[in-house]
Image (cartoon, rainbow, N blue to C red; front, side, top):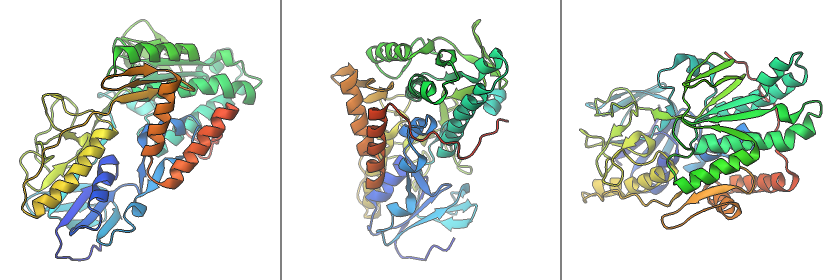
Length: 424
């Protein structure tokens, strides 16, 4: 792996997501050797993946090179690799590019799409957890428009123009709103030979309301915003099967659609080799203590979405969103330095900064500790928070320019089929 030998304690971090990047920054130029491993050479700002899927942004505006994160850190290294096995007894990891010993190991591997064991849905639906998957969705949407323009039968055209999104959480709600804007603003201009009224967007949610993690106020407002955009919302609806053309649900609802986007849940992405206690409820998260130590190990830690820390406020673990990951990464950086110096570590306490979701142009919902609001001001707050949270000045400038252009022109400039997508 060509990592130089050092007298400094070696900290190996697996995963360059929000938690991993926050930790790397906190350990910058400290008396440690840091090795960051990831299967991609970039950090992805996942909250804006849906905008790549809906042609609002190019992928390079929400991705940031991991080597750029550590370029000013003399004792930090990045390697493009996947971890295949962990040998806790030898304090060694086995990767696709070789083996590496560690003094401290931090797992920040995040989550992967959860299909709840349904192989048919896994085969035929479209996930949206990575940049490549978002680009596939973008290509498929635009390819469907092109095919619908030359479709010979009404049924074929209708199937191509029907988009089903499963999962009414923030990802599903935001994506449904963004696709609805394609219908309202792009389809009538770009495809004059298609009747935009024939395009239908269905949002399916198994709970009794959309945005279940947020307040009822936010749920009601989000549903009203979606309906105003032309999205059909189906609550208390579970998808039982999808064969690539027909969506079967737990009710009498059956939909003919060439596109089903799966945003119905995630599961942890653990690494093989650690006989740690993992939850049995399909979450696959490592059980950690208040210092993010994996239960049963002194030198192995887990942070972010893969970590399950039980507290009185969060008996099922912290929300699998960016803020807990960022905060855990920052504190663990301090705690590792304290541990190396022989000082006691500090317990993690999550500072909930609220939650938010956007539902298209001028529409968003925000839940803060003492205030809940929706509409244009909430949308402005959502944009500002997400813009400031992007990694890298260039990305902030590009996203701001794109948002300004899109807002003024009612346009989505990234309507390109760069890499045609072929369904299974």
